[in-house]
Length: 228
Image (cartoon, rainbow, N blue to C red; front, side, top):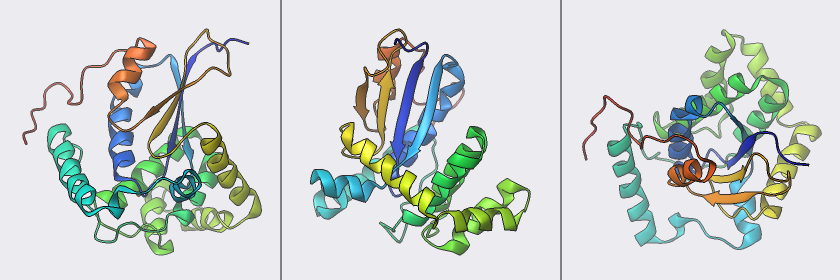
């Protein structure tokens, strides 16, 4: 069966600074792409990389230094705020399972607000998102100060159903050829549902837009002029 609409599935993990950048930049153009269905799928990046025998950039001093400088440049050029966290990397199993539970039980808009907030906590405010108290403090304002509701999602994160779905997401990512984050699985409208294309990296948005015939006006919105 042919897909009625184009689809973009983004596999992500909060631990990845390039995914933070990709998430922020991608969402600048979502409103210009109303004909595309978008899904953000949580996965465990460490599990993917261990399985495919990939290694993080931070394992190599020269790549580590370049990564930090590169992210600072991207921030300056795009206007996306960024501060490399003091504690890096942190274990993101808990916040990613919380996001898995949120994806199951909340509307997409609320779920994506929670992704955005936790990314900001780590890569803007330099807070350790592996800690329960940090997750709770970040998310409570998004639920009208309903602490009990956020605590219920923290509890759901340890439930077998959520753990299993999170693991399935990670296994599915590996089966699709994912080896890092962010990874975008793209499907064209009119093509068979099982026909898909993999794009890796936060710098592939322009290519994805061209591939799908979507408008794209560059990294910097009109009216801004950030400087290096």
